[in-house]
Length: 529
Ligand code: NAD
Image 1 (cartoon, rainbow, N blue to C red):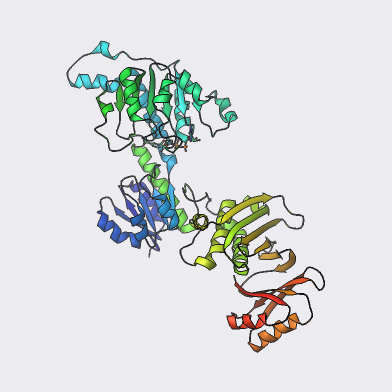
Image 2 (spheres, rainbow, N blue to C red; image 1 turned 180 degrees about the vertical axis):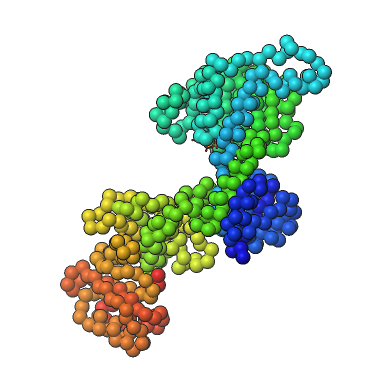
């Protein structure tokens, strides 16, 4: 019998559905057409949801999805998914961008040819039974300067294809190391140079606050007269009204858009211009790409549900399949250290500083930090906190999280140190894992110890005076609580000291109150990890 259910909407290619079915533990539920009411009805019963761009995965839907752990977008854009709402509810959101790279790059090149040779316009006149050979004189691509803005998956592929067509390709991407592309003969330049030199400009950047209206009246003014512009990325990167003016005036000789600020769009004034061509967001629309993005996203969703592997996530760091299992001992250590410090610290959490050293740094540290933050918050919030929303919840609560890597310490091959500062006190706990893979606390507040933290514990701070340990033993004996282990640490004889007791049974508040009556006990706290 299936253990999980994944709902697939928007006509996901069957190749991916087969992958889900083949797991034998995940049941694919396919609805190519479903009303909003029906969807709200069934969403509460599924663990995964896979969509393309048609379904609005909004806050209301996510709030109704009580069991949902993962939302997969077959393809790239997640404009139809409320990422914040998903993160707040601890739902992972992933996409599968790789599958549409070749297809979208090919579409861009198709648009480039169509733009240079007026193919759509010429065909339209033929359809109207006109033979207007002289009207559609084109230009060659070879030898022209082609400016690529955004050199990620698609931009790089477009650049490569256009180099092969003897174009002089220059590219701008502020997040790419200039040395990375020198070998292929591709020149990375600044944006100004693209504007000043390019005969054709194509954008392949995500739509963000930085890239919205990247091509506008002001930037168009810096371009060569007669430049041609392409956008097969996202609507809004090219300002459509400014483009209209520039096409009308002839400053821009031609433009090709696959994407619009609002879609679907059949009413844009641009469509009336002779020197403008467009397609209805066809960039990723090929048989091969739809199959590939469906296979990719369905495999990613299965890997997450079955193995906790995280690939292509938009609200969580990447985790290869098997990485969590391989480094389970570090995750276990992080969870226990965080659970421990959260329970010995009073007050409102303000700052968490986490220091990683040695072998632990081989693991995805963002993942470990999320694990620690989740474990710190569990004693306070219990339900509803998980690895996906832990950092978000910490931020909402004003908790500052700092993460550093330090050189490997002398005595340990790996070490995690957590310092927690609240509005009333601060504590510091360090832990390591030896070859037996058991988590060990090796230091609390500067006192060296060696404890495998597990089960019920009592944490004391006291003055190092005779009678304290005897007093603790008396109280526990009277209350019938068996001591499983005792670990002591002290600054110096007669100074401050701490004791960590492992006990076999849970300890009530009444017992803790009795400890507090013992002379020289400064604090006593129950810890359970
Ligand atoms: P990507 O993440 O691989 O690449 C984006 C690149 O843009 C990165 O290299 C990044 O460094 C760069 N970048 C970010 N901000 C920049 C800025 N201000 N200036 C210059 N470069 C900047 O993404 P991708 O898969 O190559 O996709 C590129 C675009 O194509 C995205 O907008 C994506 O949504 C779109 N897309 C459209 C279709 C379609 O159907 N038309 C299909 C797939 C992808």
